[in-house]
Amino acid sequence: MVADASGDHWLWLRDPTPGTPLAAIVPLDNDFSTRMASLMRFHRRLFGREPGPPPRGWPLSAYRLARLHRMLRALDMRQDGATYREIAAELGREDDAKLPATEWKVSAGRSFVIRLVRDATAMMNGGYRKLLRIR
Image (cartoon, rainbow, N blue to C red; front, side, top):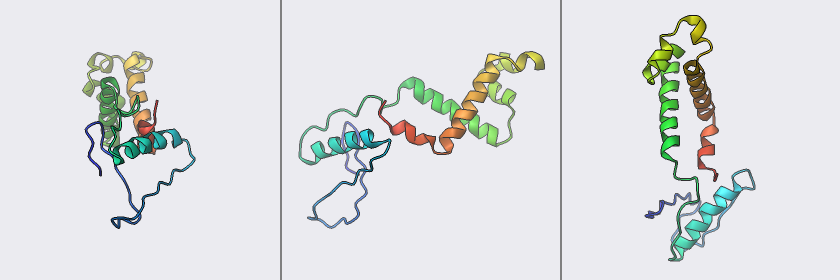
């Protein structure tokens, strides 16, 4: 790891022998732009220049961080056997959670919790990589 005030650089060195020239292997995949932006920042830092700020979208907004936190809480609860109503109550949707069954089925609170659990499950199954992509 190379520390940097504007964002640390994490490297995997195949041959960490001092003095050995470095080379970068960049896969031509959906993350190519993100990988190149990161590589260019590291290149500037390596040669003593200012790496510049991370690309727009890398630092997660307060809203996205809060949603990710709610997603993790909802997924943890669901995997521990909690119902959608219990999750809704825990996440501050007590009024929705207390609705009669017929109203609960079409409530915004129920839809909110189901979306959180669905999106958290997708993240758990590999979707977390999207967090690193430049938006």
